[in-house]
Length: 262
Picture (cartoon, rainbow, N blue to C red):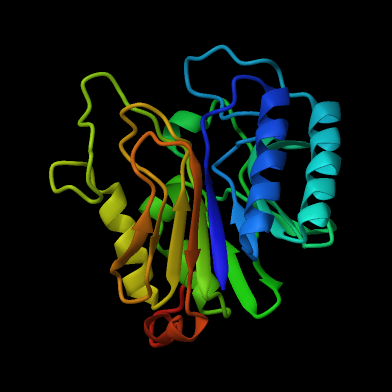
């Protein structure tokens, strides 16, 4: 089975986020991928702390879902779209999962916010889900919750997920280390955590970020034994498409956990 990660540039506007997403969906469909995953809040664009962003626009977000649904149906591919949504609890970081016919399979809301996000995205999710397309069962954990709360990954694998997708958002900070090789010991722990999440649970872990100059993390896929399957060169925009062997994702170590997760 092929899966695709949309390692695209950060959109310059909400409108561009939708056009970039649709182009990537079409390309992933042509590649033969079963599913494509986008970075965190790719639509309308992640709201960085201390940056000026337009106010949430529920009408735009609803229309974006309609357009992306059409692109998924045209390409016959499942889509995990990092998106924000307006709820009665406030603005929510979420992922909308589309079936290959363009219908919405469901949502995975971010349940563990980074402390820096709480002022911008006050709403937190309380429910976790797994999704199925064909022979693939997968979960979604969003950025901080995948880095700092490994229970979120184990929850999905214990419920049959062979792949856990990890949309995230990360850019270079002033004076930060700028890696050129994956999981460089001089870099932060984050890329090592990708390998750990896979090895801890005997699953594939597929993490996707936008392409940007000096980014501390790139998009990558870790095998169920914790080794690296592939990664996107740092700062290079494009799809990361990989063949995975679902029979290797047994979930063995997740299933052997004697402590009840979440």
